[in-house]
Image (cartoon, rainbow, N blue to C red):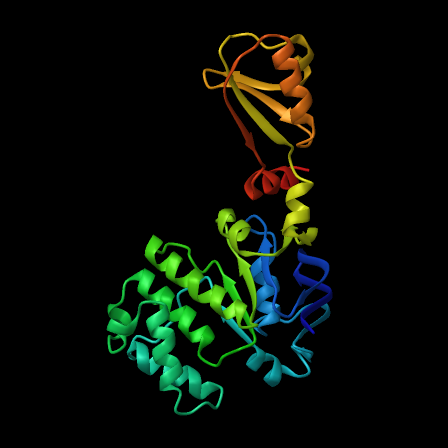
Length: 297
């Protein structure tokens, strides 16, 4: 089943076009990354999904429910962790989550609340007033609020911005378990190593336009070429390999590698030239390299 459908979604703010006919789907069970620089339209798209902003054109559905016509069912189907820290300073953490449960008509939800608190390291802060929490702890509560009604679709908008390493590790372990249980996860982040590690599909936005939408492995394979770093016992490189030279340093020679099959011919050239190898390493492009390359197109 398709979890999210954006169909030719556009958004105008006066004369400014924030989104230009964005169309893509997110399948149920996906761990989906929505990437782009600041101002690309990611948060606007999420706001439309959550009903905080009305699209100027097109339609959006969550689990088959139109976010405008079937807004009650659509709100129940999605939990969103916003970038901003929004909280009521008069409630404790547990009271905040109980009230959030009540918004969705859920009573006697303490067992699930306790489980969420344990997974994201808030058990000891359960009875602490929200205004006494650090920024990182408040962000943990934002995550808990998005999960409290057990939505099938979870949207994480920069969830680890400004939080410590311990929270990142515990949060991702919990979110991975939710995804393994069938929850659909949509992630926006500027930490591209997180998207590369976690997500199976990736969309890239730039200036309100969709630049790419592919499986992660396919996107990574079409990116920048692999590089071969060789450390030799001599300072020279055979003439036949000079066209492949990308850079040279004290670390050795860095050669562009179109594919792994090319490695055999490179080793033959080195052996025939009598060049002894001290070390060899193949480096693959990471998502950050591909992202920068695509944003500069």
